[in-house]
Length: 220
Image 1 (tube, rainbow, N blue to C red):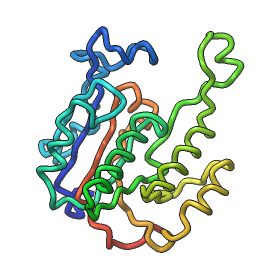
Image 2 (cartoon, rainbow, N blue to C red; image 1 turned 45 degrees about the vertical axis):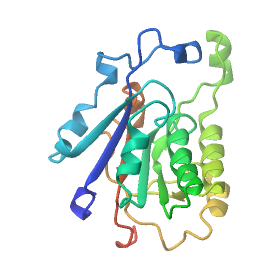
Image 3 (tube, rainbow, N blue to C red; image 1 turned 90 degrees about the horizontal axis):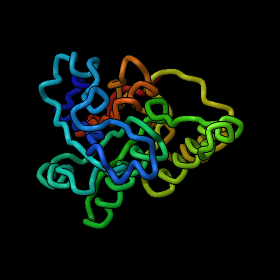
């Protein structure tokens, strides 16, 4: 992506206070000053990591009480935002929707693009949830429903940056959600944590790559 001309890389990252109110809803994670709150080494090792803008956040939303709204307003030349990370139905959803709603409210021509294979969420089966006394979280269901909701609200959902068979539950939704985007699937995103999405979740990693070219070759 950097080789294709992208020069803005913004990483909203969880950096929670030890007594974060959010921990009433979620287990403690990404506490400020711990390894979980740091940028993963695989990203820091990239030759252009000195161009990263890291924005700490203490809530699901990267826009509430953070530096991100100011960054967005200070870069009006950026008209295409590419969102990746996890979880599909939590931080990533909030980030993509806020970028879209912000543009709508301010009458801005902005593309918000999300690459389906570069986002994911966690799965907790009903049986496991009963054993642990926690809420179940069917991952495939939440992943598809929240992708669909984002698409319904103006976020462009592209299927892949590389080949990966879709989950069975995704096929019907994608046939509908991608109508109008066929022929526009581009290689928008190559920044993926080498340990995969699951490890990125442990580090509260959300990568926002912006100012991306959108006229490259289609993905085979």
